[in-house]
Length: 389
Image 1 (cartoon, rainbow, N blue to C red):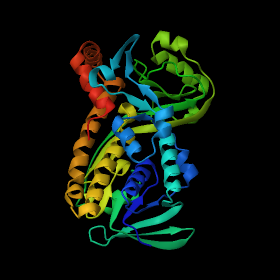
Image 2 (image 1 turned 90 degrees about the vertical axis):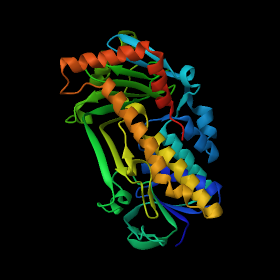
Image 3 (image 1 turned 45 degrees about the horizontal axis):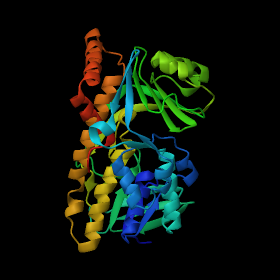
Image 4 (image 1 turned 60 degrees about the vertical axis):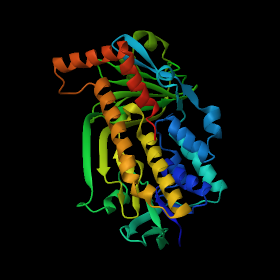
């Protein structure tokens, strides 16, 4: 089997790249190790920058997003019982849109199926061959049968644990990592959100986040120990702890109910360099991970897709390699800024086990400065809504 671009990973970044390439007449095949239902069962954040929204529009997949997504003009930040608002549109003229990553992925799957796009599911034993040559290929198995896919380029959109990054030799790639000493316990509940805007809470008991998927589906998180397991937390215990971490007036308005999903996610900052080796290009979590505090995971994957899609389009349109040659440099320049913002916001809002009294005073001073200083709010808003591509 032959194609122009082989895409490893059938999550949102791989599907978005495939659909965008399709709009320019460029063929691709997507290889996904799980089933469609499994991919759509993953619960992920849903705060979308305008850059991602515009890419979905360009891909012809934004109708439902624009109809059902919730515009957010700002966000609320609390510390203790103090709470203030950072106004995104005042400082940047740009809102974000809350629309679940699962729904983004569903829209992209529907678009690829409608276009007759080729997606292979339940793919095993993926091996990349000749990525540093002009004739790369991929071997893999489906239902025990070995298959071979020849291509011009390979896009590794297969996540942190995928084969793509591991294919780049160790003497070529360099990795940077910070592991945070806590996790996020998150639940999904069929209850109305406590507030129409997101609440980021810094509490003496630890961080909390109040978010939503729609007007009747809420997503809440609390900082927890890495030793905790979801089953250690009853729904009642979660709700009581959340109430202790958010301002009293918000806690009084909190509508509780049974959780329909409960999980714990560790927090990590990670970047690998370079993001290209020969004809292999890394996208999204295959190349970088951010803590979820700044809602940058899917959005940084989208910016990778933007740079790669435009580079490949330029190559197939006129033979120029300028776009693909500059892909890693351009993508990493934006990635590191997103990493900085996510690290800063995580440091501002969480309690760390080794924090001194001085550290805690500095944290409160930073929050007070952000509350009172328009320039600081503008800088935060610019990063939150997304830096330009």
